[in-house]
Length: 114
Length: 115
Image (cartoon, rainbow over the protein chains, first blue to last red):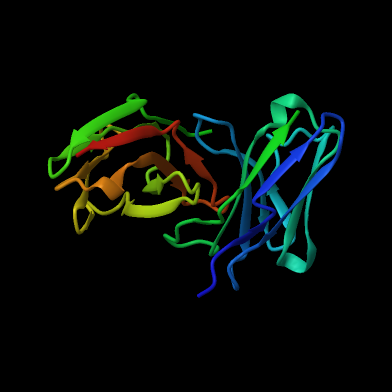
């Protein structure tokens, strides 16, 4: 089966610019996660969707970050305006709802803000 | 929220030897799931092994096995016959069994395999 697809793989922007990341989860996976992984740290959940509804966005900096999941499938994560501390890898993952299913991850997008 | 602690930022092992990575977690739930993920330099997180909390038997996947101590809230990963390809970051993860389906990750252990 096809895995979780993310694009772009790399992005370099200047501070105060905007950027968007795209994720296509595994077909049939109702749950979609966006994680931020700063170098040397573990993934930190930014937002979790169940179909097209938000389950948890408690750690999403809502003044600059936004995310949507259109029709419960693809998702986009946007940062506007970007700050230097947003430099990180942004990981998208998906999983089946319930059961013992693990999260399947994409390859991530490495964002550098200069 | 649940917390996951990995107290070993870095570990090293000789090729063909055995290494154990530690993980502890804090939870008030009785039913949950635990995972070990591997993240090589390519960045993609790959599942290594999983454990359901209601199962007393420790999970095993080829050279990888866990020591799950529910009362102690400990979940260590043992890698036997270490290979060069095992070098990576390893993350311990906890998943709730309630309707939230949230995953919580530790800070990771960087494993170096010495030829």
